[in-house]
Image (cartoon, rainbow, N blue to C red; front, side, top):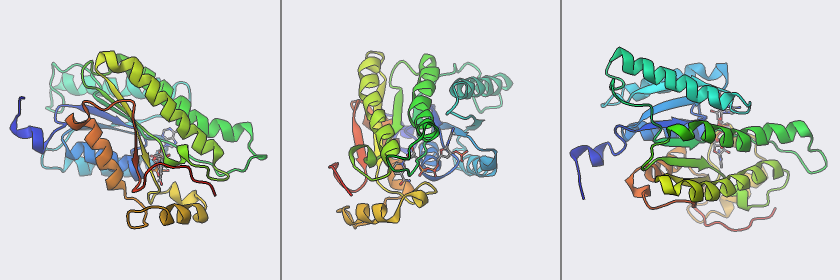
Length: 280
Ligand SMILES: NC(=O)c1ccc[n+]([C@@H]2O[C@H](COP(=O)([O-])OP(=O)(O)OC[C@H]3O[C@@H](n4cnc5c(N)ncnc54)[C@H](OP(=O)(O)O)[C@@H]3O)[C@@H](O)[C@H]2O)c1
């Protein structure tokens, strides 16, 4: 087994990671944790209003002792063009950085995506009987179609050995939360995509996994009915509490590194609780 001094301090050094939804919440935490472990990170976001937050995160990452390189890309992954735009824009930034030889990217380094974290997502609280096509499109275009189109757009550039695709699901995929059927079913779809892509991409040395958080304090959680959140806390054996962004980010970063070499097609519950059916 070969080891180098940076293997433990910066286990993701030399890797390029894309994190969608990096402007806030869980995605911000994942991007920071991957960068802390040495990866160059592309911070993908959607809203123009998120630009200051993304810039601040990029500065925070560049201020790390190893000054991890960052790229920022604005793209709406709910559109059919957004995912391709995200990859093309990142590739152009990467090539420009390599061309100028400013030390951010080695001039000879090809554009290779080592880690793709499909984190961006949205939820809608809407009871059966009131779901309209706009609700369906909003949730499924981001949570399912966006993940498919972005992973396809990244596919030609995925590192042929050891690339990681990590989809961020939810414990809701296996629960029965009332009025959250669109969200929960979209996250169940991610689990199916994860298993099938793991079967398809394994021959190329790519692993595909799904990390499913329980409730974590974030802008999204504020829109979930309080009774559901309280019920989840009550059923969480570990301290009956919410998870933290860091706790989820470390699970993702672990899968992204060598500890994830032999894990594929799995759904990892990052929730302080084992998966089970929950009805409310
Ligand atoms: N928080 C929880 O309790 C919890 C629990 C289980 C699973 N999750 C999952 O974890 C992931 C992150 O959740 P979070 O709580 O951190 O969410 P959040 O705070 O609402 O952040 C959502 C992120 O997704 C981005 N996004 C939204 N629409 C987009 C679009 N059309 N195109 C590209 N990016 C878009 C947002 O970018 P802008 O800022 O630019 O809009 C933002 O960065 C989601 O997949 C969520 O389902 C969260």
